[in-house]
Length: 553
Ligand SMILES: Cc1cc2nc3c(=O)[nH]c(=O)nc-3n(C[C@H](O)[C@H](O)[C@H](O)COP(=O)(O)OP(=O)(O)OC[C@H]3O[C@@H](n4cnc5c(N)ncnc54)[C@H](O)[C@@H]3O)c2cc1C
Image (cartoon, rainbow, N blue to C red; front, side):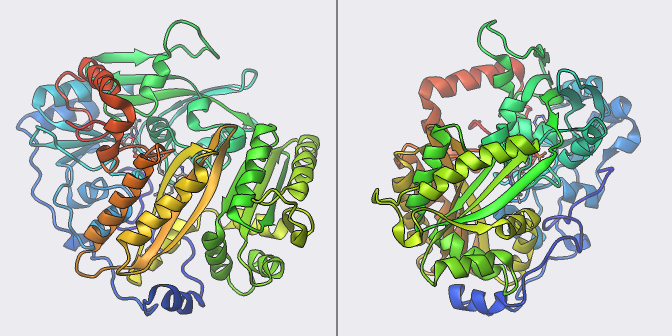
């Protein structure tokens, strides 16, 4: 609440980021049957509907004593800005001014001790506590659910944003959890270092929020997910402090760090992290490749991952996402020019591959991977002769165009919402063996649920492992004007059921939040769910921490 803020109804600051390209109107008409004209606009901030704040008597005063009166706020604007994350359902509600569940009070502690004291005050005063980092959750993670309490306190981590120390020799940095990712990289750059964790929400996400959700960045194939970058952490729970040793590895029993990673604010508040950092790269090489089919591309990526030759960024779009990307890239776009030339109007599958590091290292790793890409075979096992024996190179222009536009998606989403489009994403992961069937099953499930408004469903693979990969789906459809939330809920339910039936995970990196609760208990099984519940009970006996997230109350 004290620093730069996003639009309460969308992504980024007002006026930031690109809009829709001019030719998109025609495409939306052709694909989805929407006119391309603006049909809805968000309400003004002053018109958002909020109930009066209802913090228990005495709690507000106790919070003021802990953090200072200026850091305890319950004004209209502050409460609206802490009421929701950035999922499609969140944005639908905020654009309509429906903010009945807003937190009663927003408190911004300045250090670990203040966080600890705030948790004690809320446990004593009887209020739910919802940690708020960047507020970019897309699974209802920051929704101010109250559980059995009458009041909700949003615990804003914005003041915990210091870099506490950089150990250049060990390549680690100790930082407070509320530091935003670009600001962390900016501070590390003074030492020639960076974190290198770049989710699409990079501009706004915090390092603590990423750790609390087990986030994956665009280069996580090469650099590892956030879980692999956290060496140690400090967490304030209602039952006291849980701190782990920042040793590179340990055999001292099960890893307690792992219990906190992905705990989504249900155990306590992560206040500090020690992170593995890496040198700012001296060389970057991004380029595009085209496969004749998604299956052929997946096979090539599997071979690369299993040979330990995967690029740092490897992002393979299926045929529908490739077609959409090329069409939306615009007449002058480098991806479009190269892609259409290679496609010759036939479907194909676009790979963006990127390497970062020392020039020699980038050249060596790229050479080995390119050799494999050129020789890759089709899904039927035959060399893709029609394509010159393997994947077709599209050159650096295509790769650089992707890199330049890699944060554009959420800005464009706002423009699509104005035009009456349903636009949302969902993600999962499974083994290489299960990947083709899972891809088909989710697409079919979403298309079936949205049959009344036939959708465009695109998908890409973006995080590779030797044994499997993630799938990330983007859904576009004409928005149902009468029940837009119900329309998406039915598609999400169908997709979640298809994912569970395929034995895949309900989330590879968005976390559980509130929206994945229907599937997560089955994923963990009865004993696993009980263990998580027991852990929560020990750390948070009163049940104040982020009720209704990760575990059913
Ligand atoms: C446009 C867009 C693109 C995205 N792209 C990606 C992507 O590429 N990869 C990816 O992994 N995710 C992505 N996400 C999801 C989201 O950005 C991540 O989950 C991110 O890790 C959340 O960080 P945050 O700081 O915004 O956390 P918040 O949204 O503030 O919080 C997320 C959850 O963690 C809890 N929490 C936050 N901070 C703390 C803390 N210090 N201690 C304890 N609990 C805490 C919250 O209570 C909540 O449950 C995207 C989201 C959007 C809107």
